[in-house]
Length: 51
Ligand SMILES: [Zn+2]
Image (tube, rainbow, N blue to C red; front, side, top):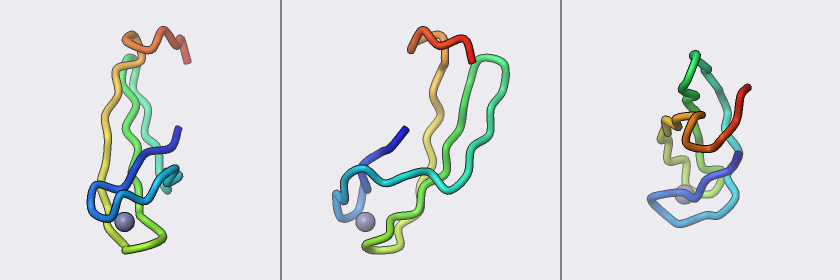
């Protein structure tokens, strides 16, 4: 799942790391354009995904 850079708005940045729990998944991103790093947490139940 890709995200947009919050710094330079680079689109479709791919995650460099992923950590999944029972109902949550965290992605760590690093922007290839400006080097910004950020992370997201998503609740899998909100996306209707079982795994
Ligand atoms: Zn960026």
